[in-house]
Length: 293
Image (cartoon, rainbow, N blue to C red; front, side, top):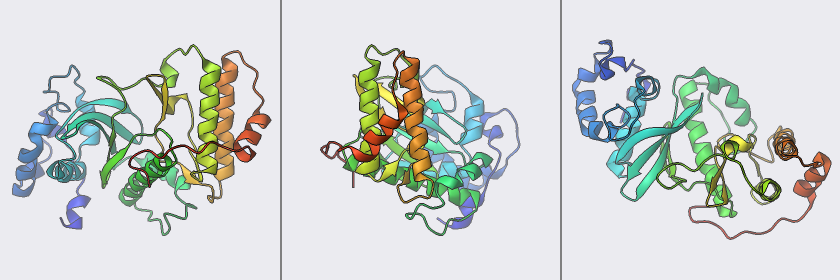
C-alpha cells in the first residue's frame, strides 16, 4: 500500500448518513475496501447486537487511515468484528472485538488529536526510539510500537499486562481482560483488602523498575484492572526506560500516587520507605508470561 494513501484525513460523517460531506468513499479503491470490512464494523456503526450507539465515536475514531489499518488486520485474521468501546480517552479508544481466537481488545489511537504533541516527552530520551519525527501521524505510530514493546518486556518479567497480539499504524490489538464485560478498574470498585493490594502494586512498581528497567509513568487506580482478585496493569504506552532523563521523576510520581491512594483508605504509609523498597530492596523473580521478550 502506498504511503500517500495513509495521508488522507477525510471527514467520516456522511458514512453515518448524518451529512453528505466526503465523496472519497465512492472512489473504487475505498468503496471496495469498505465493502470488504463493513460487516466487521456493524457494532461501531450502531447496527450490531450490542446496546450502544454513539455516532460521534465512529466519526472521531474511524478515519480513512484507521480503516486501512483495520482492513489489513482483518485480512490477517487478527480481527473479525469491532463491537463497542470499553474505554475512551483523549489519545485513544479501546474497543471490544472478536477474532479467530476469541475476544480481543482493539486500541485505536486518534490520528488527528493534538494531545499527542504533549506526549513527546515520554518518547524523547528513550534510547529505543531515536530520531523522533515531529509529524503527528508518525508520533502516533511510534507510540503504538512503544506500547507494544513495553507490554512484551513486562510480560517477559512476569508482570500481568495484556498480551500484545498485533499492531499496525495507529491500531494495537491486545488480550481482552475480562469475561463478558471488561474487568473493572481499581478506581471503580471497593476492595476488602486495600493494604494487600497496595503491597502487590508496590512490588509491581519495584519489579518494573529493577527487572524490566521501566517506569510506568502513569501508575494509578485508573490503570489497574482487577480480574478474579488478580491485578492487571494497563496503558503502558508512556512507560520509559530507566535511562530516560526523567525516569526517576516519573518513578517518584508513580509511588507518590500509590501512597496517596492507600493513605486515603485510612492507612499511614511513609513515602520515603516506599522509595527505598522500590529502589534498593530485592524483588521476586517471576515466571515469564507468554508473549514476552
